[in-house]
Image 1 (cartoon, rainbow, N blue to C red):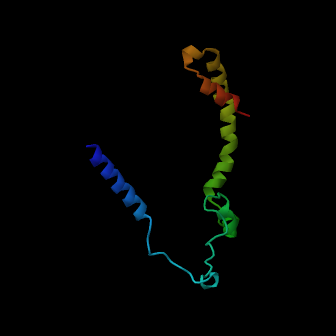
Image 2 (image 1 turned 135 degrees about the vertical axis):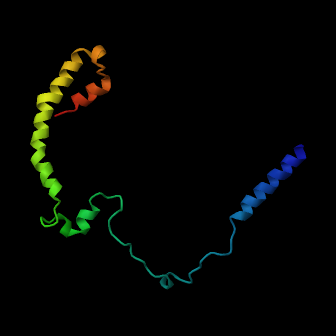
Image 3 (image 1 turned 60 degrees about the horizontal axis):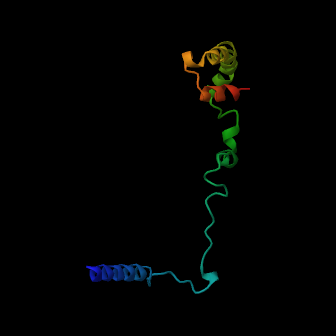
Length: 114
């Protein structure tokens, strides 16, 4: 049994070592033979501002989304709701944490408000 394990181990190591060797590699005769392929964009695809910099028309007033204007109009209403209703509820709930289920996470969220 031990001999069989050693044999299988040697065969596996030989297969792994031989599997990395290949003759299908591309060889360039010199650095001048290879052409430079520029990237499609100079910006990283993970850069969230790449679209802003690469499409100047996106920031123009003509292409602005009408829902954005509605958001500008409704923002003060949401702020008033936050100060008039939401913050007093958090303050009241923090007085009786066991009765209301006010947790340390709620306290953290409330402490991070401006």
